[in-house]
Structures are given as structure tokens and as C-alpha cells.
Image (tube, rainbow, N blue to C red; front, side, top):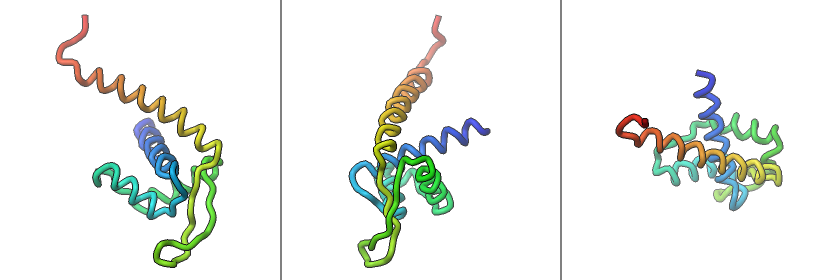
Length: 113
């Protein structure tokens, strides 16, 4: 079970870092981006998203600052750090290799000799 938890946490971290690739976003913006690009298949609850943002900030992969949202409300905006950009590149490459291997294995219709 711990392995599944780590896999899910790693996936969430990658998606959050990717969401911040183009511009700083507040938490709701990150959640909306993830929902949009996954066609609503992945919905980020506040209780999952904000601890992940704090964890990523603690690792030095993102930074935050207060600003005003589109509707003039005070919001914390998150942006990637240089270390976050490096981490995203390495982990995204690893993720693609991993998913390709698993997809190949699942596509087999008969055992390999």
C-alpha cells in the first residue's frame, strides 16, 4: 500500500510542477489546470492539493507569494524554482519510460518465450 501511495504522490507532484511550467498559479488555478487537461478524470480536493503544494515548497521546487486573483481576492501564487524545473525534467522522463514499459507489458496477448 505504501508503494501505491508513493506512486500517487509522485504523480500529483509531477502534475503540479507541470501546471506551473508556464506561469505562476494559485491553488485553484493548479486544480483547474489538472482537471482540464485530464478531461475531469483527476479532480484535486483541497485536502490533497494544499498539503502537496506545501510539501513541494518545503523541497524547494516551488516558491509562493501573495497576490490578487482574477476576482480581486487575496491568493497565494506558486511558481517553479530552478530546482523545480530540473526535478520536473528528470521525473517526467522517468515517468514516460516507466509508463511505456508498463503499457507494453499490459498489451501482451500471450506470454513471451
